Amino acid sequence: MSIEAVQALAKRDFTAVNQKILTALHSDVVLINQVGQYIVSSGGKRLRPLITLLAARAAGYEGEGHITAAALIEFIHTATLLHDDVVDHSDMRRGRETANELWGNEAAVLVGDFIYTRSFQMMVSLDSMPIMRILSDATNVIAEGEVMQLMNIGDPDTTEENYMNVIYSKTARLFEAAGAVAGILTREAGGDDFEKELATYGMYLGTAFQLIDDILDYTATAAEMGKNTGDDLAEGKPTLPLIYAMRAGTEEDAALIQDALVNADISKLDAILAVIEKTKSLDYTHQVAVAQAKLAIEALRRLPESPYKEALKTLANYAVERKF
Image (cartoon, rainbow, N blue to C red; front, side):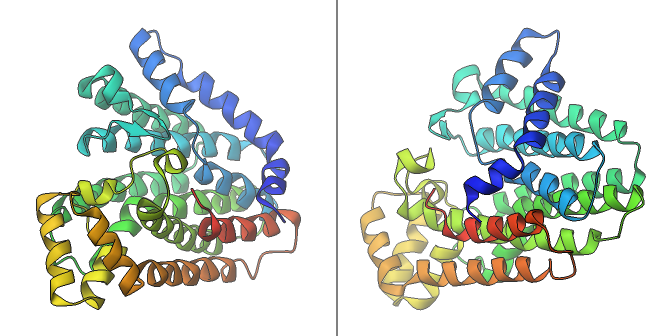
């Protein structure tokens, strides 16, 4: 199954999600409408809500609650993007100026707060304590992950284990929640209980997705990624390609990368890219990502065969094959 076939399979549900998002974004405050519409309309893969839609159908869910769940999960993600761009001093995302670049940090943070809180209003409308528990816990862990990442900035001694913990918290946890919510909706509607399997699928998929993002930061062009090449290094973020390159390279190679991380300096980016190529750190990172994607697919083993199950497998493969 192709990624286009996956999108076609989910088109009806996704159209309903987009309408739900537009309706929920409305506010009597003009600035909220302006910033909210801008960030939501700026594109993005929307994999998290897609996971919820496909997972619910794969589990046999026939209701409409997954539409609200998918929309609010996208809201949580959108709020984190608004806040992240302020923290990272980013001026470009998805090929467009960031909201903080256009409206200022204050507006970006406050509208992010609005979108966060609107997601919780939508959560309440589902009238499910298990879903509220999963999503409130996930939102809290995401915040912890962002703080953990902040603490790692400029730290060349960050270990691979520590970094994997960070990306689980800041990225994979919301993917995990997107799958778990689909399982809960199905169970509460009287269907089979696949919450654990779908949560596990989301966790591994989210980890693979973030690892590929780490690779693309050093391989994709600004036009492809929608942000500047080498942004992670410019922000002093020790991602897995750099962590492995320091471990596998010479003392001089490690010193070069360490200095760049400590000083958030990309003036020697070409030399660092040469070290990354020499140590095959991108190959290593890709191998880790592929292993995670395979675990995601394995987690679906107990689900009944269906086009939706195949679509979830396709998403896992797409996460590690994508070029942007």
